[in-house]
Image (cartoon, rainbow, N blue to C red):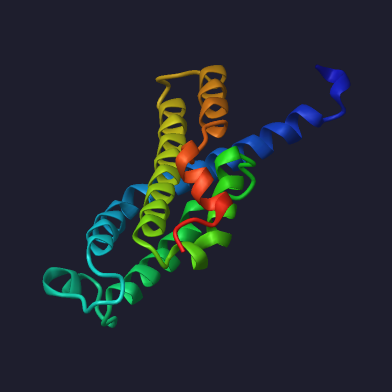
Length: 171
């Protein structure tokens, strides 16, 4: 449309940048899988007990399980946020990050951290896959937009997890 004053072109540029960011975040999410596996194992240990065996080798420089959990969360958490996505899951994720100090004190809270981070990572990975499918010609732009809309509206919190965070449970 020639009457849009260049708006369509600017929107296309913005969408292209967002999709490039989604693809980058998807690649990072794929590599975070190992951290989530280690984190899951750590959460089975006593929160402040010493790290033993292969877990100690996987996370050099920390001595307790609690320190290792905190180190992994601090390393992985920033990689899960995709700038400009505006998704419901991003808003929920910010709320979860604000709750970390309260939640880290209980096994239930630690499980919430892992579940939310894993779900957020899965959404990022799926976004990256949509972009890859579009770039390879497997789907067209409209199908990609529909899939992105569906991913962006997914909640990363179950009602039980939301209640625990909202209620300050897990202390």
